[in-house]
Length: 127
Image (cartoon, rainbow, N blue to C red; front, top):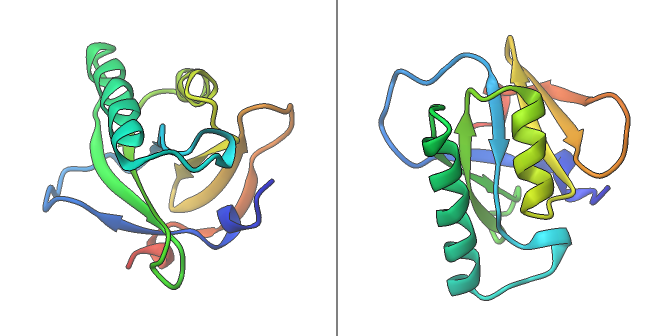
């Protein structure tokens, strides 16, 4: 697992106040940590967004960022189930997605079996 996952912070991309209390954060950017062009990443994320919305789930823009803000990956917060969110993570070749339940933030591996890895409070990760 890329150590950067354990340090990720989040920035909201809108002023929406009605976010679900629980859900998952998924991106289609940089599959398997391969750095793609901004155009490729945006196209991939647009496809992911369409899949989330067509499935009838909430889809809020959020950005995962490094502590120093040098690395940023636009993502989506959705109220889709863990099973569905993992399916999207796998389809878009992600190593992991994030899960939020009762303010507990976890890393959920996409490619290997195992329990989610609890990494702290989601609220404490906001920038």
